[in-house]
Amino acid sequence: MTPFLIQREKAMKEKYLKLQNGNAVSGVSLTGVPGEPLSLREDEAKEIAIGFLVWLSDKTGQRPEAMTLAIGRDPRTSGPRLLDGLMDGFGAYGCKVYDFGYAASPAMYMATVFDDFAYDGTVMITAGHLPYNRNGFKFFTKDGSLGEKDVTTVLEFAADTETQLAKIGRPPKEGQQVHRLGKLVFEAEKNDIMTPYCAFLKNRVVEEIGTGERPLAGMKIAVDAGNGGAGFYATRVLKPLGADISASQYIEPDGMFENHAPDPEDKDAFNAISLQTIGGGAELGLLFNADMDRFAAVDCRGRELVRGAMMPMDGGIDPATQLVIRMAKYSRDRKKLDCEQD
Image (cartoon, rainbow, N blue to C red; front, top):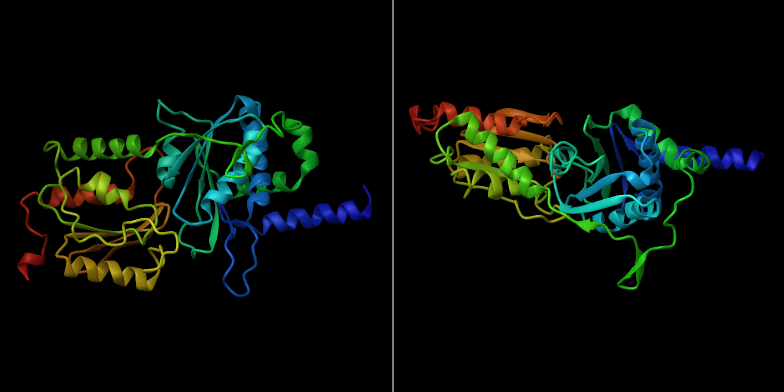
């Protein structure tokens, strides 16, 4: 290998590894913030998709064309472009890919677990609690979210075209894109994970509380999604279970996050849910990040119960729902905890 190629290979590896953020990938995907040039575009998304295929092929022994994958996203405005980039990688290798649209990270994990799905891998397009101009990827298999070492390996594969060719060969479907609004793309098939995921959560709450189909009747719960992707938790989970969600705020998706950061550890965001819970007369306030893998909670006085807790991907009841269940059991007599005693 010539010195030029050695240097180029080193630069590519550094470029992709700079995108690692713990067990996720994140970079700047929108212009407009001074001093923050674009670092995660469709081209990078394509190579990262191929890196994930190489990693997944090594792990499962499957060829990419035998894999079934899915992609979901939070409301960030760069999401559709990054989805196209991922599809440039997945589609060229002949993978069967489903597009879930707006989704949540716990639901993306469950798409590898639910019997009706059981996909080989999924990708959530999100930058979690980071600002609107950032975006990224989180990867899931039936074993959970990829760890830091695995994400490093995915990015190393993304940067190394020779390894890609050696391990999974040339993309058999390259050049077979279709036209969409004047652009050549690989199309993913639309599918829905959020309906079965919401049903899963509702069924678990009903089973755990054991008082009928509307076990949260009489409870008032304020949800603040920070205009990220977790607003469904209020409208599609808590409300059908009987909860009064009228004190909820910022539950409509808006990828610019204009009201406050979608960050359970952000001071302004935490103050917002505290004040809303108190002012709305709610027993419990829940604050989520953009992809619903972190949350914070306050009691009826706005006092911290949980802050910045991770939502483990283990197929069980997530910590936010566990807290709702505990609160419902504790307040079955419909007293608002200790608030009515003061």
